View 1 (tube, rainbow, N blue to C red):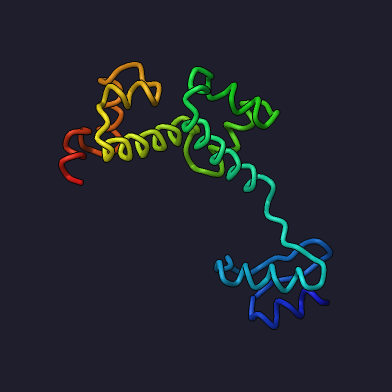
View 2 (cartoon, one colour):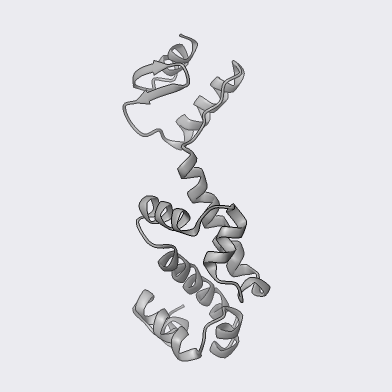
Length: 160
């Protein structure tokens, strides 16, 4: 009843409330989520997000960290993630694809391209960038960059 009262006070439409579970009629805004967290916290409750969604966010953070650490670049992504989460890579990969709508590899390529863009703004050479991001060659970096952005690294650098 206390949870129902909080939902009503915050004008959050819900279908039903059971112990440990609330079925909402719509997605909450960030503001509503914060308000609900605060109100529930005041009575000793908390909102538990879906475990898979939390794991997805943790995988994304881990991949960003993986790219940032040049000493880990010799590791395969699969080994890094398996060691990090102590889960089978097939599970990690299928969960990521299901929830993110793209493979870990495609996501990692997008992250790499964002790093390339950043490094280009610091006037790093493509050779330095390729080495730093563990590309096999400048040609491979350029090809992947064009595939993702639709322009070459040189064209991108001129445009920004």
